[in-house]
Image (cartoon, rainbow, N blue to C red; front, side):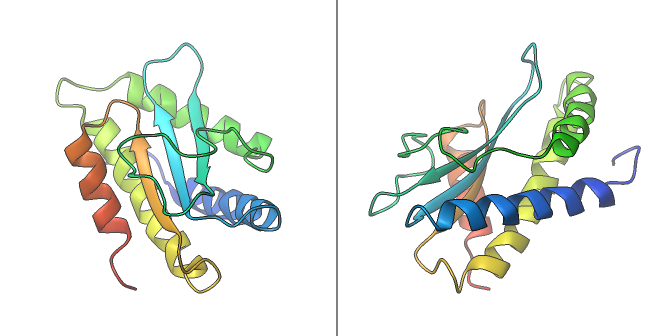
Length: 151
């Protein structure tokens, strides 16, 4: 369980995600949208990824048309960068079971389910997911299924 309140983290992640989706949906037809993060890097590593090709790529391949921050509009706010740095430091102090990584992953999945609920009518053919770069293909698939259940 987090040793701190995650409300401001959740609120800012929703705000920045909505802003990014607004920007990118005016430029592209989005068929996939993901939070991608990586633990244990020299710098905190959190990105947005989108797929614009039909049909969306299998989320386990990471071979989307615009992977991890590779599109105009993928930028998060400076405030998010500061808050994510705290989450990254929190995960860096993880135990052998990676319980902190799983905790942050669960938080991101919960937010992504909210985003999907808010955007499913505007982006009806879009899949939504979360991917920590070291997730197994099975876990990535389970995450994809969990998030994309009918609202």
